[in-house]
Length: 361
Ligand SMILES: Cc1ncc(COP(=O)(O)O)c(C=O)c1O
Image (cartoon, rainbow, N blue to C red; front, side, top):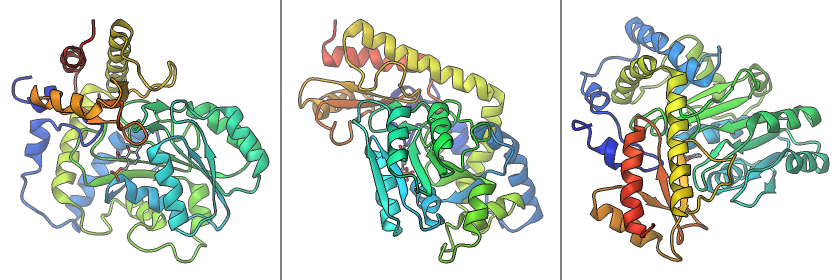
């Protein structure tokens, strides 16, 4: 795509390349966010946001990065222990935030190169039946592992009435996240991932069950209080001054997502997943996540020992932006993001060059 070179060149697992017309939409004059017109514009964005979240509940929007809603999700939990599934960099962050918010955290540690299983969770819940919430990262951006969410949710519900908090930061908009069908209690993402927007907005959905517990809880804070953010979303109000340029970009991008179709967007991401899998099989370059548990939006690819930086630099010299693995995989793995508005042809292009750089057959 000649007018969007970064969509052919930038393969970070966030922030992603943004389509030029979406960037251009940010250049609108500023307006008051407290007008009926802006409420109408926000209301008009809801159906597409709800389609992405697979929900009929209002999708709340906050000017923060995704970590803001991660913190919001644990901030309003009742003071019971929290079971944090820790299988990677961002799931560990969820646990740290829960601790920072004064919660007692029980870590269910899982090797970073595989998903937590229903059996792991079942055993943890048997050992700790009194947890008030379970945190999980659907698509772990550090490892590219995707969790079998439906199965895990069924396991939790069979043992416990704990709230289920799901980081869907690199799954939502790139693959289905069944917020309502699974009755998830908090689901959130950030703008700079598969939604294909600049960073700066976070989106979330919160269940009635969560809200019913949270409403009675003192000390929920103010800016990131999910109860008030939910109420504002219900009334199509911006509770504080939003990052208007990104809101304008969102408005435009939701129209583009509507034109592509949400299911078609998921299918395109599944195709990109398949392309990386096929390339890995042909070249012998290993993917960290096991078959059947691979994120549709990000892949951690094994390079020679200690060569991750060198490979990323060699790709940069050829005009491609990739990044290295996150600890403990920062030496031997590079990460390829294939999400947002990136097209399958561009993924084929970067893989071809990557193969040359790594020296694959
Ligand atoms: C799975 C996951 N969770 C949380 C975050 C944190 O998002 P942010 O940097 O927008 O706060 C990221 C960012 O890469 C992520 O990939």
